Amino acid sequence: MTLATRNQVWTALPPVQFDEERPLALNLDPTTERQLVARLFSRDFDDWSEVLSRLGFCANPIRLVGRSETFDTRTGELVRSYGSADEALGVTFTRCGNRRADKCESCSRLYAADTFQLIRAGIAGGKTVPETVADNPLVFATLTAPSFGPVHGTRPNGGRCRPRSDTGQRCTHGRPTSCMAVHGDDDPQVGQPLCADCYDYPSQVVWQWWAPELWRRFTITLRRLLAHHLGTTSGRLGEVASLQYAKVAEYQLRGAVHFHALVRLDGPQTPEGFAPAPPSVTAPVLAALVAQAATAVRVTAPPVHDDDPARVLAFGTQIDTRPVRSSRRTDDPDRSLTPEQVAGYLAKYATKSTGDTEAKDSTHLRRLEATARHLAGLSATLNEDGDAPYGLLGKWAHTLGFRGHFATKSRRYSVTLGQLRRARQRAQARIAEANRAGTRLDLRQLEAELLAEDNDETTVVIGSWTYVGSGWANGGETALAVAAAARAREYAQERAQRRRERTVGEWER
Image (cartoon, rainbow, N blue to C red; front, side, top):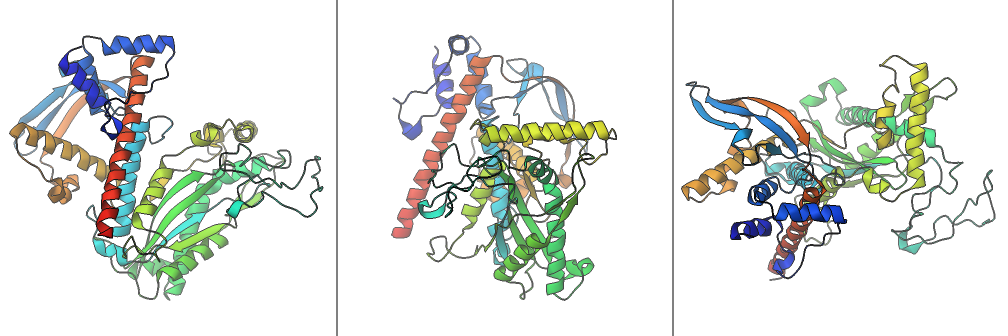
C-alpha cells in the first residue's frame, strides 16, 4: 500500500481520542469482507477514498454524468467548465442528502447541523439574524396526540406503570386493565397497548393523517388569540406583531406523532423582520396563549369508508408550554432552557423517523402500518377520484399515516436551509482558493457575504446532467463508508466534549 493510500485511509477514518491503536470495528460477512479488501488494495483506491472523504462518507451517493459551464453574465466569457469525464472515476458523486439517520448517518448529521444553526439563529441571533431577536418572547411548546388506548410506559420517580386498586379488573377481551410493573426505558413493553384489541388503531391512523391540518389550524387560532389580546383584528395583526415558529415532528414509542415547536412573537412585519415585540405580550403570556390555542383547535375528519364514523380530532391533554429565557447566561441556575439545549433537541428529532421505532420490531407498530394499508384499500375502492381525502393514504403507510414534513418553519423565523447550503458551497470554494494561493481565510468575517442571496451573482451555470444510479458499487464499499461516518461522528463528539470541558473550566476560573 502506498504512502498516499495510507494517508487517504487515515483521513477517511479519523481515530477517536487520537488513539492510533484503536481499530475500526467492522462486522462483515465473508462476501462483504472480500469486497472491502478488494477496494482497499485496488489501484484507484486513492481516487475513491478522496471522493469518499469529499462526500463526508455518504452511505448512498448519487452518481451523475454530464457537464456544466460557468459564464460571466456581464461579458459572456466562459469562466470555467467541469464534466464528469474530468473525474478520475469517470462519474460525478454527490451526497444523497437524506435527513434520516437510519438511511445515511453522514447526511443526517449534516442536516441536523444545519437545522441546529437555523433554529439557534431564531433564538439568539447570528447567521444574519440580529442578536436583539433574543429579547422577543419565545416559547417552547410540545403538542401531543390524544390517547387511543392505554399503553405501557415509564413513570416519574420509578412509579408503577398503571396502578389500580382493583387489580383484577379486566377488559372485554379478558386482559388486565392495570399494570403494576416498573418499566425501564429499554423495556420492550413500553409503548405497547395493554390490550391490542381494545386499542383504536383506525383512529390513530386518521389522526396522523390530519395532524398537519391540526397544526395549520393551531397557528390560525393562535394568531386570532394574539390579535384579540392586542385589541386588533386578525387581518391587521401584522401591523402590530408577527408570529414566527420552527417545528419538528417526533414519533413516540406508541407510534403517535407529536410536535415540538419554538414559537416567537416579533413586532410589526418589516422587510428585515425581527422587530421588538409589543410589551404587553411577555413570554408567560405567549405561553398561555399557545396552550389555549392548542386546547381549542378541532378538525372534523371525514369517514374513510361508508361504515366508518366521522371523527372530531384534537391535540392530546398533555400540552407543555415553557418560556425560553434566551438572553441570560447559560450557567444561570434559575434558567430552565437555553438556546443550545432547545436547538440541539429540535435538530436531533428533525432527523428521526419511524425507523427509530421500527428497529424495536414492535407488533404494535406493524399493526399500525397494516391498519393504514387496510384503510387505504377501503378508501381506494370507494373513492376512485385522486382528490379523495384518503386517496394517497397507502403511500404514507410506512410513516403510520403521517404525511407532513418532519421539520418546518415560518418564513421569517430565521435563515433558510437553502441559504446555509449555499453558504457552505461558497465557503468551500473560498477555502480551495485560499489553499491554492497560500493565504489565510477568516470565514466569520465573510458570514454575511456567504449567506447573501443570489441577486448579486455575476455568473450563471449552464449544464446537462444524467442520473446514472445511487449507492456505491458493492456492499464492501458501503460498509467502509458507513464505518467511516460512524468514526467521524465519534471523533466530532470527542472534540465537542473537549470544547465543553474547556468552557466549563473557563467559567470556574
